[in-house]
Length: 233
Image (cartoon, rainbow, N blue to C red; front, side, top):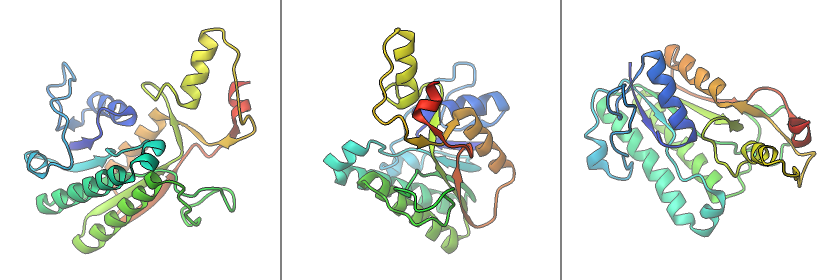
């Protein structure tokens, strides 16, 4: 299977690319498997370059502007990149008759009304970033229904693992411990569902091998809720 991974240099994308290479899946936008170097970063806003990619069986769409503070400071850039980038990917798939897309979204529910949070929980996005991801989801659903593309949208909760943002919770805690620093928690009772990146990659692989028909949305987490204090102690 030939898979086009957008956002292949990001945290999840880089891990996914390595995972695919180990499992025999061809990632079409990298060089030979021996050096694993990225051939070129595809700008999803550049339709001409995007359309140069060939021989694609499935798409994993990870690329987006992800910074919440940046989305507040510059909402236009976030909305434009995340929505038009997704639209270009969908139109690329439509024209190339690619029938399998996994769209990686984000947590969009805000403060929970009930637990556990399911896919029918009311959405309450709190930033332009989250709102842009909802609009991207809507595009995916419409393209799936209008053009017969099978699309799965995944809404992961907190993913951690190698190459994750050093400023995010778990990497920052590890750094403090390694430096024998005092671990500081501002909201120790706040609970999160923490998912190791390899488990997320395994899920993506299983979906590719048994792809649902039509449009589907799935929350993705470990199924366990832990406070920040519990993670440390």
